[in-house]
Picture: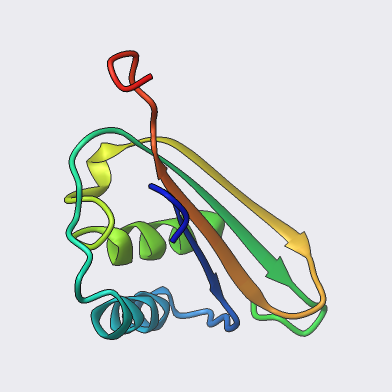
Length: 109
């Protein structure tokens, strides 16, 4: 956590989005029990790092699994996400990096 933003790195990948969702969900249930979801618009960035031996991933399946895992923890519902950026890139190891932050509204600025 950094101010209002959440930065998450999952040092694992699986081709099964259901398993990935459970992995992230379990992490939040054990590590972020005191965090309450918030209302308002959000920006989420997801970077899928892969190696030559990584399983194949559809970016939309990974994004859905991540957003589902963040729902009820960071924000109440993934319909609050107004900006979503997802990309795959080569990396040193297979992992997923996630940043979720509330959008600044004119009233909050």
